[in-house]
Each structure stands twice: as structure tokens, then as C-alpha cells.
Length: 419
Image (cartoon, rainbow, N blue to C red; front, side, top):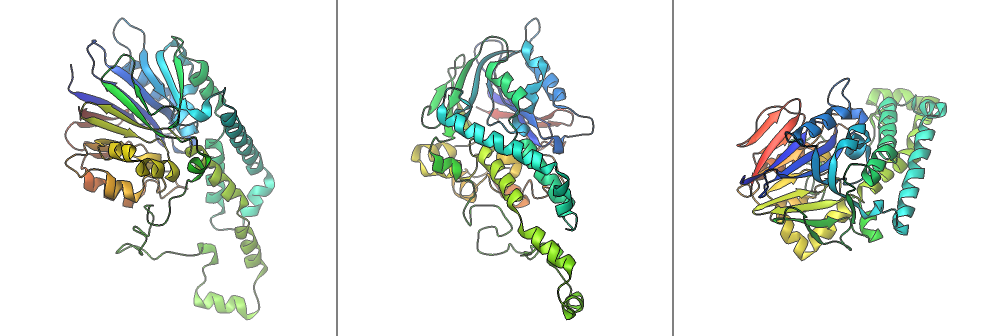
């Protein structure tokens, strides 16, 4: 029996797809797939499709003379970059024991239905609005207009219902798998069927509307430019309070205001003040993230934290609960939340809860550069995480990092976490 847990991070670009293999008495390992999706704006290469990753997964879970089998499939939340791979027809031939989803996906839960329907209507409405000719015209006079349009459309597309993928998760696969809809209220922990040494602790999402609505970290809890909330980090560029569209040199200012404000500047000002669509798209994206599963896999001495895209409300609730905080403090492997975004890994977790480098075996960030999201992953966050463990890798950075961390450029990264 192996003395380690293998974690494979597939290179899906801007998305998440992880395969856990845990040793057990049988010849085959206990296999758990956590998410399988990629954002269309951040595929790892031109011409790549999620079916490429699915084919590799199926090859990896197929034993000689047997059908492909997964003991558990987990979808942390319904964003495109976490579930789009489940659209592939190849899943029809995969036998699955259980499927775990957040409680907001429970078709029998009335509160969940209200949340899903509201999010779906808003996503479709935004997508239609962003396709209107007037939308492009509105931003045509703004220097960052094209980038803003691309970002808005990407946010809306990511939050669509992803019906084909969700249909697979709700009713697909072979083997008539058991479906579990998890929350911190109805399930604190699960002892896995078929792997009695594995306990999975559910740290989120909550059913409390205030918790899943509380998505933005307060000052000092986000890895933004102002690091600890006390001021700019040493050597950093000064913060710009306004977009470059409103930045004038002294000479330009004199020429513009000598004869009054030009109509062009007036139009740009009005356009930039009307940010309802941006605020709505961003809020929708955060709302879906607020329902994300946050799971801790406990197997022997290995504690593997998979927070999906959980944001401040879920993190704060976990760190405020003594039992959950104790689990977080035992983390030996951390799947970096939300692709390294500033709003998914609180400063408190990294600096006060996460163990020091001798105990953190590795961290993994599944990401791919996207032009209109230049701050993902946050460099400040990755710098702080690297202080805790030198075994920190990104799915888009082939190479080797630390003992036991092999990076295969066409697939991703293999971690072998001691247990």
C-alpha cells in the first residue's frame, strides 16, 4: 500500500480539475475527482477543448481489463471554469459511486431553487444585454472599453446555468451514483464508503444567507496592493484613484479647461459613471462563488484543503469556528482558492492559521493568464504562500518544484503528499 496521497492537477488553463488517489487495501486506489472545467477565455492552448482533459482523466482511472471508475465526483459550484468538462459524452461510460454538490444544487430544496433561478435569470439577462449593439457603442469612447467589454462578457458566460454539464452531474454517469448535497448545516463530515481511513470535513457553504452573501473581504484580509491594509507595499507603484481615461498632463489640463470641458470628456465621464452592468456582473460572479464547497480531506497525516472558489463569508465562518479553524491549522496541502484571486485566500488564513513551511507540504494554483484579469493570480498572495512551502506550483508553469512534485506540461502536476 502506498504511503502517500497522489494529487494530479490537470492543466485545463483557467479552471479547476483535480484527481485524488488514496491508498487502500484493494489493488486500486480510492479515486476522487474535484471539478472538471475551464473558462473559454483561458484555455491552455489554441484549439484545446475540455474533452482533452476528460480523455486524459478517463485514461488515468481505467485499470487494465476494467471500466473507468471514480469513487466520488465533486463539483464545488456551477461556474463554467469548474464544470464545463462534464458536458462531454464520454462520462456516460464512467462508473461513479457518489456525486457531491453544494446544497444550492438540491432539486428538492425550495430555498436552493430560488437562488438558482435568480442567478440563472440574471446571467441570461446580462448575456443578452452585452450582445446589444448599444453596449459596444457605450464603451467605444473609453480607452479601456474593449477590455471592459471582454471581461463583462466572460463574467456573464461563466455564471450561466451550464445545463449540459449540470445534467451529467445530476443524472449522468454509470452505476446510479448516490447524490449528496452538502452544507455546514446538514453535513459536518463524511467517512467515505470504500475508504474507511478517509474523512472529508465540510467547511462550506453555509445555509445562512448572511454568510453566503458576505463575499468581499474587509480591509486587511485581501492580498491587494495595500497588503496589510496599512499602506502600499515597499517598492510598489502608487495607487491610481482614477482610470487612465481621466488622467491629464498639466499641459493637457490647461488646454482643455481654458475653453471649458470638451464634449468628449463629458461623454466619457457619463459612461464611466454608469457602471451598473459591471457591478451586476461582478456581484453575480461572487454570488455563485459564495455557494462553493469548501472541503478538507483528512487521510492519516495528510490534510488536503480544497476550498473551490469560496469567498470571505465562508472563510470567515470557518476561521471563526474553533473546530474548523483547528482543521485549517493542520493543512498539509492547499489548493489555492479561486485561481489565486485576492478575494479567496484571506491574509489571516495564510499568516495566522496555515502552518509554517515545515508542515505545509505543497500548494497548487490552477490558472492561466487572461488579459482582462491581469491580477489573477495575485503575486502578493503567491509570494506569501511560497514562504510557507517551496513546493508551490502553477498548472501553467511546466517544470519541477520540490521533491515529489512532477510537472508534465501536457497534463499538469502530480503531487505525492505523505500520509
